[in-house]
Amino acid sequence: MEQATALVSFDVQRVREDFPILSRTVNGKPLVYLDNGATTQKPKQVVDAIQAYYTDINSNIHRGVHHLSQLATDAYEITRRKVREFINAGHEHEVILTPGTTHGINLVASCYGKAFVKPGDEIIISAMEHHSNIVPWHMLCEDRGAVLRIIPVTEEGELDMETYRSLLNERTKLVAVTYVSNALGTINPVKELIALAHRADVPVLLDAAQAIQHLPIDVQALDVDFLVFSGHKMYGPTGVGVLYGKEKYLEAMPPYQGGGDMIKEVTLTKTVYNDLPFKFEAGTPNIEAGICLADAIDYLNEIGLDRILAYEHDLLEYATERMLEIPGLRIIGTAKEKSSVISFLVEGTHPYDVGVILDKLGIAIRTGHHCAQPLMDHYGIPGTARASLAMYNTVEEIDALVAGIARAQAMLV
Ligand SMILES: Cc1ncc(COP(=O)(O)O)c(C=O)c1O
Image (tube, rainbow, N blue to C red; front, side, top):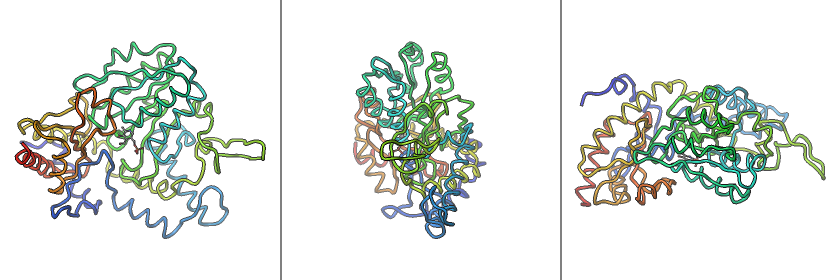
């Protein structure tokens, strides 16, 4: 097969040198890491920064006059600035640093819910959401007597936009959808989705957990109202994430948790809340993760998301073609616009067994429902095997995956 341009022009070997874990072996075989949707590996720039934090500046932030505290605070606030630039937010105070995507969605469900959602109001999500973007809305609906409406998914794994249009009405209070499906790879038409919601005067939350590491995102160009993502899926540390929110909504929402940092003044009878963004950042955060998220952003900027997108796109096409050469292999999720996720089933085998055999060959994939049980119900399957690709994966690794699946098939069928 002739190799597409980006597969040739992107210096993947050079990128791989930044990820020491990629040269280890698993079960005596070179590691082939294809579970990037769950979490990405970290470049040494990020690992070194974590070590440097503890070696040089470890201290609590935002409340110390001493030197180390000021260094740590400055470093933490540099991350906020870099996140603002990375997603082109209008203001730094619209960037809330959270423990991750799940926390961000729960925060919006709880606080936006308290401020804006009344009995009989409606929230729209889709049938392809991760449980993190379903359960908080179930909880909100239970709490506020609201109703959840669902955008159906087509057989190819795309959103049914006609039904979406018909769901928007004067009772709709929020639309919360994923930018990229973790289980199918579908890239949703978010610009259109947001424009339609805004025409009905409805704000939109985008779950960008599977988008931020693959696509350039400009929150002002999208005009999105809330955007959430996790550091650990974008080559950064675990324990930090981002909630971007438009000032007008964040100002109108009550705080999520009470505690240190989110206050201006406390007496024994009352609390005056702090300004944005601190109003939503109670307690000591994961400081080193917060600081070192900036190193992950620097790394992504250095490689360039446009180049990453082109390379991963061509790698996905190569992988899709090669995998479809295996008789009995079916890909779940065949949307026209796809990110680098391939969910698949091999006739006559259980995904778990395929995953275990691949692991023996050093190949890490994920099997199961991918925290998207309603989506699996839609396809009438208990789960899939999923290979999710990152910028450091190679054509040779795809070949190893294809050979591994064929071997598993020979053993199991
Ligand atoms: C689309 C999507 N949303 C939300 C999450 C939850 O992310 P986290 O566990 O980092 O909070 C994930 C994680 O896989 C995801 O893929």
